[in-house]
Length: 303
Ligand code: PSU
Ligand code: MN
Image (cartoon, rainbow, N blue to C red; front, side):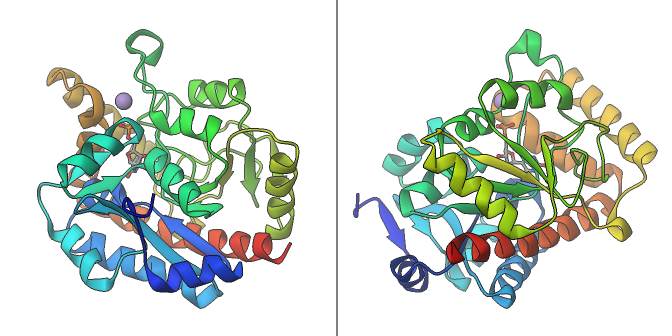
């Protein structure tokens, strides 16, 4: 495995001594946000994790290896690059053999984090069941990864570009507990609530750590989804964002987009149509998630 995995020395040392480490994904850098906001945000997120007392490990594929933790220079290269491959689970072997630069999705980041021995991973929002997914079967590999890989994923729920009720149904089918961190309702990324319930509300990071430890002690496969809403001051108006999402979905339909290009297309359209206001919300929620995720990683390491 050593020829495929490359750990930043700081991350390797933290894992060796059992110090808290927080994994971070890279598709949000390459396909989720424009340059230079992407690199700026990635750096700030790492700083937030550090300030809390955990070690950040941004995960990406460079020169045929899975990098667990990126140097400042590598982060910048990834954020500026144009031909970065979006790497989900199925793309991992292909991208590694090709040597192409690859940005890992939630699914691939979970898998790589687990390979390295990291239990907590912070992202913005997860992929899910797309609208009309019951016909198209377009269901993000993120959900199957949550079903099988033992990592806690901290996020602000999922965007309403998806079919959120069906997304929660699939997670239930696969036995993925959904924790609301200081919330009773599943957050809808740009807004604080989707109106859908979570499985349990937990207000203390130590309680989240106990649920993680208990699930895995039982030998139950798969991860845990920890959702936390965007801070009130940064949330968007739900009518405005709903309208923008509808327009963006119509545009995607009219272009007959398919497969892995759909999500990045929608993310880009939403930023354009809100003239960057959705991007500011996105940045704010990722930073908040980093703070929560670091607290959970610290609590988990303390057990
Ligand atoms: N949803 C977001 N922001 C993102 C993504 C999804 O709000 O950046 C990215 C994540 O990397 C996620 C991936 O894992 O898109 C899901 O893509 P797909 O739907 O093709 O599985
Ligand atoms: Mn898909």
